[in-house]
Image (cartoon, rainbow, N blue to C red; front, side):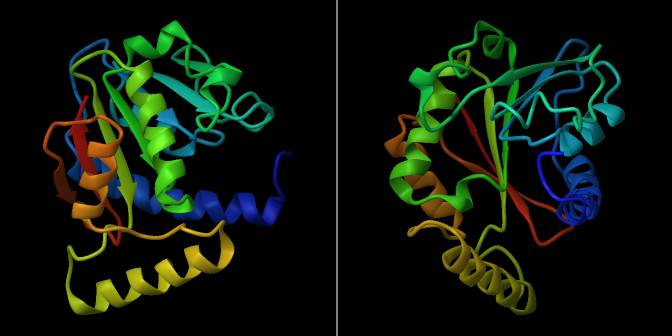
Length: 207
């Protein structure tokens, strides 16, 4: 296994709850043949949940070698294409795969908060370069400043967690801070925030 059983089970439990909120409150394309690309999607738990809800959807799972192509992947091989590579080093391959041009939605769930602004812009630029015009990029994170006081306190605690356990510069961000990252990455369209029935939210931009 690519991670310990305990950590894997913990991530699965968290994903089950958050995926339900994403499906309930974010309008994924329902048209037949739509493709969802989960960038940094691990072994595919969130992607599987969304595709189970949208039976006509296809998927692409992108993550590092040894993760997205591991024996632990849970997605349906008949509906999901697996691509391995690095979103921080597009020259290493993976993000230049032509199959990514078929994606209608690129999902970055709990990815950007792991990185500083410079690295985050690198990731966003890699997605932009891989995408077709008109595709949507959605960032799923603990979006600061979008809920009531108790929820915001929990987000700030998560912000401390990101700073303590990740490289310098990792943090939770506001919608305005995501818009600034999008702009620096060349994603000029206005961002839209989708609140979820959860502590997390979705920030969307059209590529």
